[in-house]
Length: 90
Image (cartoon, rainbow, N blue to C red; front, side):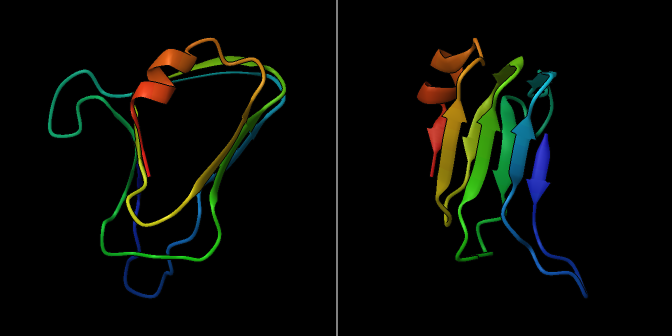
């Protein structure tokens, strides 16, 4: 699970993933963050959109939670789109 937040001395920014090979990302199957692939801290904001694009092959399973920022997608080859689409929160 990717947790996007700011810490002392560090500013939060958008998540950018660009894949040209094979990638598989899976959310935890148990615990506090079960089912969450990406979680953005509710208290942070930034003007740029999160961006996930793929020209390779892969699979992302889990919820994308970006409550205060936009997210752009260009997912040509990811095969698990129903899970991404039905679990998208922006």
